[in-house]
Length: 355
Image 1 (cartoon, rainbow, N blue to C red):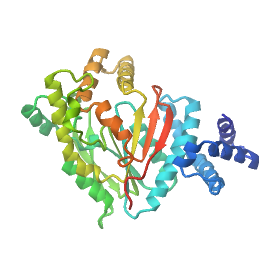
Image 2 (tube, one colour):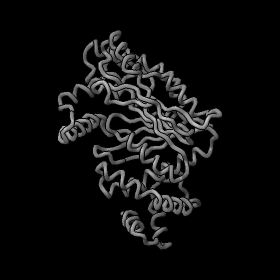
Image 3 (cartoon, helix red, strand yellow):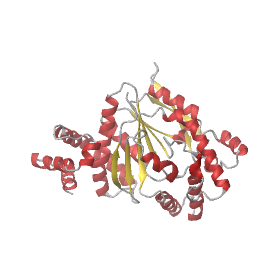
């Protein structure tokens, strides 16, 4: 790929000639999908390429350092930064400029899809564009440990935190309202959650005081997911097998209704969409194996199977995520990823809301 060679040259402090910049430009323009997704035209392409190169100079070292710690391949870092992360951050900055209020960007991704990694990288880049950006997770709005213990006594099926019903939705709505429409105060309290407390069951900790942001990256494993017709559970996919499984799925589906007012706070929604949802189980097993190898506590393969199956019984990806990924009225970008987390396809739909 010619662009990778040129970017490596650029990283060495060597200037690119006009011919080389034209080569980068033509590589982009030949990709109709890329042009459509990131609004690249022959008229604005030179300006956009130069802007991206300027931003590359400011961000490559920071992003490379972060990604190297996560074990990214050097080629992937170059490719992802040039072809996805920088264009996406630039698009977010342009969307923010279209509205006065804070931009709330939702990021939906199942276990192991890389939503937290994407959020962090976008934050690094947007900071260099002078946009105050924060990340929050649906996890930050879990009910307290004691509230979840009470919930478990009422409904013993809530054996793990995570499914709809284990979050303080009212708190989340209030926080997003404050983020969306800041009052006269200079800061806002952002709830935070420590998963290590209470032997891994987790609890809320002191909130984080933050300046009012320009952009919020809000991520979660079922962010933006909508309730479905209960008839879909009549012939549900595995691991939903028994009548008890079906009833649990129906009850969790009902719990989703309480989250709809929260989803209305999103301005945009990106989905990190695995080519095969079974990848999530594979990724979790790899992550737990690394933890065990480093001397930390980690689940074995059977425990991972049971853990992931629980969440698939609650909100099965085939029933909830697949239809959403095809709905242009509810999402604006779908990033399809392979088993190695490499983007294979990017699809752009209509922007969710007009501001």
